[in-house]
Length: 455
Image (cartoon, rainbow, N blue to C red; front, side, top):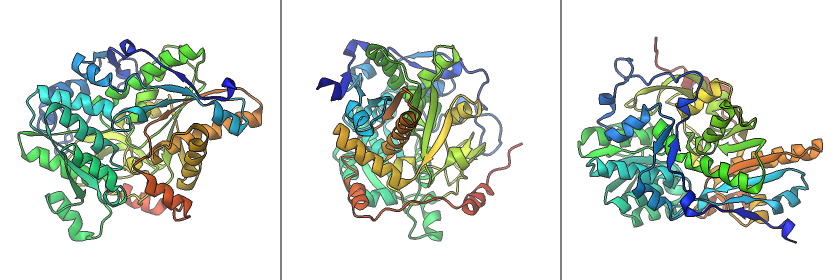
């Protein structure tokens, strides 16, 4: 009955990619430049120096197609990379679909998600450039866990501002960060001017990634020995994640298959970019015709309902202005359990790719996402993170559509992390305590009304 079992396609450790892939070298139109928040003039490297080490700044603005992965980073990658690619035959059987379903599983990393791919790289470059402390934000806690772990590898201090609703929902994520030596504070906090300003108006605020970013950026900007690390959104972060797609291309070749549809959940854009950008690079060269779909929660629909324009990356307006799909920096998302997808904006590079028509976006409601996650777990034996459930729901939808049309199609999605620290969300789902949430159009309009005026 091997035909009914999950099939795994592995690569040897010597097939860990030697270089990250930068799609900017192949795009038909360059991205709009980031702007200084005060002057609205294009940023130069010196403007970013208070927040990032020069090595990461150079990656942020690079147009090189390939950027070599340092040997020390590849050595750490070898603890979990190449990550496995699975053919989900049991799920295919449960759906009674002619579709071939594959998933790239990033939950095999020590931190349990794809976030460690960039956390290790960022910690390495910061250590190399003399940084002593890193400050950051985290939503669901996957990024905070990964950076705390990476900082422990390189002997860096780590300060994490964790969105209040996730701080309360996910105590084990917090415990994991602290086990690796990080200091974790619920955001908004009284430790920063940004946090105090929010609490003065909303003392019971659940927080948001935008607020937590403001706090972490403020801490870095005020201390020359501290730099800021971001888990998504920026070009260098998305660059580091391309190991996912580069490996997947080789593994799909081993499977003797090629995806017709590529799917990943999208919050800030890093795990979507990690799988999609290498395939989009092939698409630009005429080597692939795959549809590429970014899936976001209906409660935080930056790609499907946001505006593609310049906006701040944080609520306190301390970050540069970047052109992205945004719901407005004052957008306050509801406390859905997919904390990693509760961000008001989308990565500028992902937004640009969408604007060029190279990819498309879809939304999934919270209850549909959890139903898909439960079905996947019962078929494949992996309990997915709430964020990854959105990609699973979209993949199942495409497989059922193939069944209805009587067509074979090959679907590849990114299972960005496991849900072992998210079981309270599954308890709430099984108890009927979760609800769908469609963000009201009038509230989105109010948040968008506060967009900065950029000529």
